[in-house]
Image 1 (cartoon, rainbow over the protein chains, first blue to last red):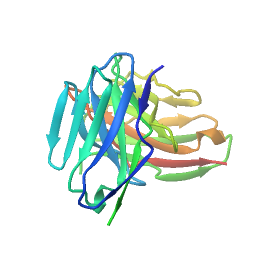
Image 2: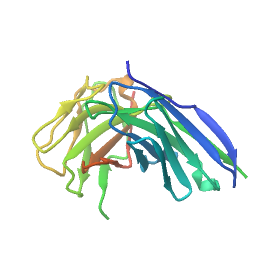
Image 3: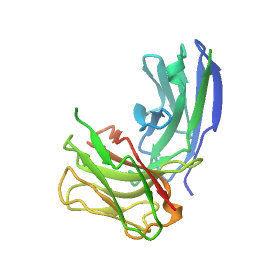
Length: 109
Length: 113
């Protein structure tokens, strides 16, 4: 079966750095996405990786290793507004998205 | 403001009743999707449409139906609601292309009693 694993919850301190991991086992691979979802709101797109390596976008970076079935989202200079759930999703060989359950990130002052 | 509009935002429904969740987008995206989101689970695809006039079944289609008469509208119908259909429902669209990122509506919270 297809599976996306990410930690259920993480806690970090304002101003610090946090890394959210995602491992996947899917039927084929056509890209990996990270979305941010604030409580009670819709998910919004953060990043997309299809080749191995690091993609940097401001305070957020996303890394992919296809051979290891592994990605991480790195958030720097954490702000209180970064408190949200972070969803990892993989597009499989049929171009369907397989979603992880999400990681709830709690930022403490 | 361009985007996706869902209605209603919240609804309490008696079991056995018929319910249609509405979804309209003004971005002229070809692909549209309906997901349900339940605590502790990832988003699960109910139905999708790659273009107007076509629809397909996702991971959890039973008890739901959709139609895509035009590019903008993609309603989701529960023919006879059951308590297990209590969930938050998200409509999304995608322009396709190399990234194919999804744009989501604000969600419809449905409670079936």
